[in-house]
Image 1 (cartoon, helix red, strand yellow):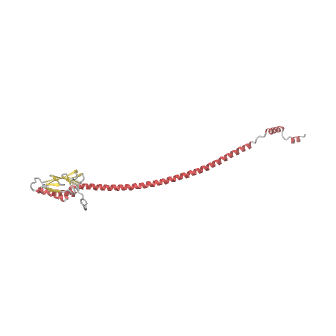
Image 2 (cartoon, rainbow, N blue to C red):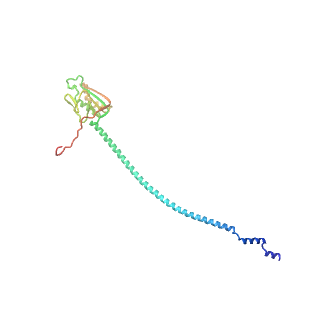
Image 3 (spheres, rainbow, N blue to C red):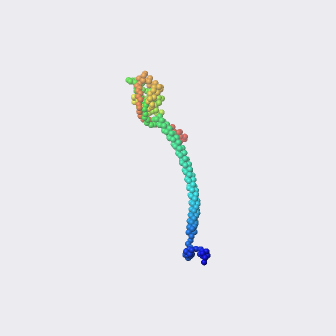
Length: 268
């Protein structure tokens, strides 16, 4: 056989032929790139499943969060409405408290005024014991007074003295412990002068509660003060006035009298 015919007939070397025969006998292995492609496909498929699953779960979570958000918003709105209602009640209660406070203050002011009036009236009526600064006036008969009645202190003289002290601003007056009121009478009964139907013994001590800074000067300007100035100078009646920082006058012993309605028909 010629060289060309041999080369055309025996294209591969015998060794290559032997190796190819072995591969055919054992079975040709899978090509590496095919296995890699299958593995990549599986990975991509798993990733796609994960993406889809995650997307589905995210959508569900989003829906759940949306529902929870709506529920929370509803709770917040309900809480705000309840809070507004409570605030309205608080405002109404505060307004009522302010009104009651104003009413209480007005009642307290009115009660204070009433108590002040009652206190003043009780002092004027002599129904309560009083204490305060004022004047002590002691008057007595003229020295060596004898049979001449004008040398003695008369009931009218005490009346002038008391009226002058009232006009000068005295708030309460007592003579020898007898508290004077609107019902008191200073009069002569026999040889004694009586106040509230109680006989007095000389000397006559007149206590008057009032402003000690103004009471003496104002008394001197009254008719009673001028009368006693004349009695002291012309008749010789004794008159002594002293300022006292604290005087105590008893309550009046004369009971108050009240008007009673007339009974029509039958005995009272």
